[in-house]
Length: 199
Image (cartoon, rainbow, N blue to C red; front, side, top):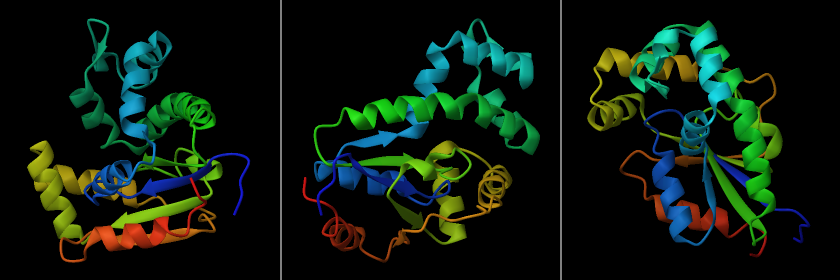
């Protein structure tokens, strides 16, 4: 298959699913990966417009000494769907624009984007294929509790908020990756990359 623009694959999955592990494997295989969470943090930290909008539209306590208090912001938006939607609308446009520029400047024919909120962010309209990473709920909870030092209740609140969104029209090309600590990841990823355009 020949493409004139990058063939873009989204690595998607809820919190604790293990999508970052898949991204690290893909990176080690030589593919460029755009991390939406990391880029969003960078854009939020560098943009006075975004900070002002967060202060005005979510809560002024989220900005302290010109910096975003991420713990405060998370505690608010994961308990209030309306506030989460506002935050998403503030940040997603900037991330999509930055990603589009990044993808166009990649030297190869294939690149990846890692995102926990593929459909909520509108990123699904920008990708050719979706790899959905999934794991049993209890394992996801355990991973996030260990990684972030959160209570089970706090993790469940975040998972429920993320997982409750159902897209009106799912992406037409979705491939599933199970990351349950028993199923080997590498053979599945190798199988999927074997179907991609030549780099």
